[in-house]
Length: 284
Image (cartoon, rainbow, N blue to C red; front, top):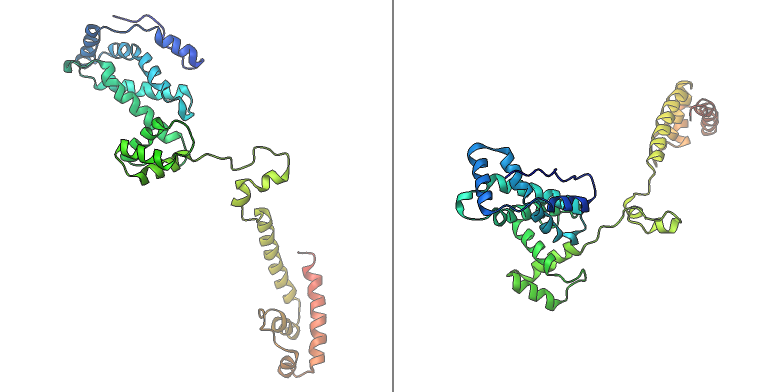
């Protein structure tokens, strides 16, 4: 049996795709076994194509059961189709089991993995046991409200897990994705309460860069200004201003070192600072 119908268009609407998928006839068991043997023994790609096309409606039906996860239906169907193709490739017609029964596992497995990868940015289930608990809990919850202790105990008993595991998974499951920045830009008050306001360190990177550049220029200008001073003036400036906080040399110590009065040291300091400002000012 060969299908003459065109392949469903995935670029159109999801409704058009579903209608196209439902137009492919369901194979009888004899036709299914014959095609599966051709694929297995002769690597017949056309046989594989017909097996896949005849079961597209099954993928659509299974994907509909995952609508509550908020993911695009087209993506769920696409992932389910990948599972279907894997099932067709591994199907053994001699086991006496219909392809649909064998394919259900592969279709659901692919959709489940897709949901776990994309439903939330933060992985909510990492181990096999957590994944099983997640999907069971998702199907058993009647709504998105937090379960009370009685409901937690009932779910834990039904799934044969600890109540702590149910509470932890529900906490992950019930978490909401929120926008980092406010959805409305109408006023500053909205921004101040948005998560982005708490993530910033309050420092503008441009200001940091500007301060760094100014510091480099100041150091460069300071070196030039010192180079323009005579040795005595440079010694006084370095001792009085460049020794670090609390380490400045007193006027009296410099007067003893240089053999002049403290007042003379002060006068030299004032004139040296004035001369330095004339050099540094154009640079900063």
